[in-house]
Image (cartoon, rainbow, N blue to C red; front, side, top):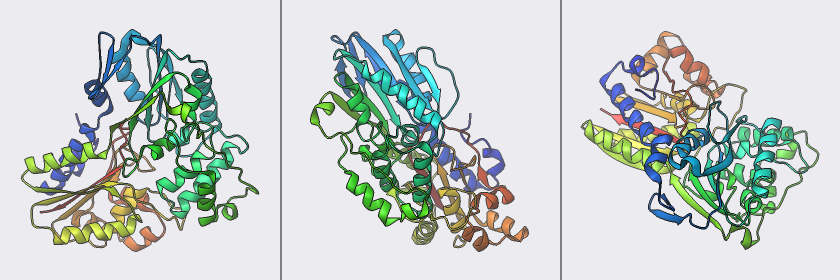
Length: 428
């Protein structure tokens, strides 16, 4: 079974097949149900999460609350592992599906909607009735920031306009989430506050470079170290008030009282390091030297592409360079695409014979139904045959249209995993 649905179609050279095999290894290493089944178990009255043990002897009820793109897959596996120990709970994801013991609510992404706000309100209502002898097991994953929409004075449409403005300006994920924390009563530690005095354990699936847990899904169970003044500075930096037709943006302060967090345990459950290590092992198995260059890749996608190709040119033959992280795209024109597609398109300007670059979104959707693209001289020749201008498509932010024309995109569907972007660069 393949994670990449058009694997065979794209395997038109041995080096391409190598890149795709390495990508498959990374995606399977972060397969959410597998990770949950391996990392969580119950023995007698003890809950084991990875290498940590939590006694359930004094716990009256166990509730599960899942948020984000990994929530449905993770909570389905949790139902298998915990069985009838689950008293109830809510899962908020962007995907339809079926659960036995938990209520599934479906929200929208990448911008917040009234549907997200209604679902978030139901989660808050559930948490507020929990008692001191209850335990809530949170699953927190990428996409949670958008889903956990609970404005106080602004509307979901206002928040969508603010986030869209920051996206277009090329704000980093940290900057975006600092602002988001101060726009919702469900982010920046608010879910921990709503659950108090119950005990909470958060399983956190990182999609943020550096794995700083307070920025993953805007840290709903973590005490926020930022203040609303920090969010105000970001809004000013990117002239958000001027670009949005919102006369005033009223920001919220996040919970700062220590008592709300004393019963909370936050666990980094999986990150892109898991995928990178698996990809490095696969590359070595296939006879290549493998180097993990970074797990915290950031920067403008088109510029990062040039740097990666320069790294590749300096590498020895039979080398695979691996990167994890999240770049940004400054949108100048209303085209269609994502970070990985733009990075791939930009790389084609510099790639040489014997190079293959494969950037992909680990959740299977690079702001589109494409997960990423495969880029090499075959791709360039197709563009030349079609008389496509790399520069024109790049300048108009039309990376999706480009890769659709040359048929060199990756199709994965929703993988149910999300640990930021992964980039594979190969020198034959």
